[in-house]
Image (tube, rainbow, N blue to C red):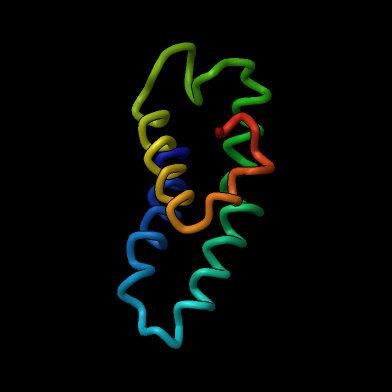
Amino acid sequence: MYVEGMADLNEMIILFPIHPPEEQDAKLALIKEKTTNRYFPAFENVLKSHGQDFLVGNRLSRADIHLVELIYNVEELDPNLTATFPLLK
């Protein structure tokens, strides 16, 4: 479930540059909105409630690797998007 959510957001980010210029402002706004209101809060809550540094269990998993990749991609678009999510930094 976590990886599927990450894949959805990552797909929006990866496809962003190929949208026509007149659509890019709206697409960027959508990415930012979904990042800050849907995806990052969910991942932050999982880490908070789990009490571990990992999304699943107590060791590194595929979900953690995908989350790091997603965070890097989000920060490429806007480094301020992680500001309110201390556990994702």
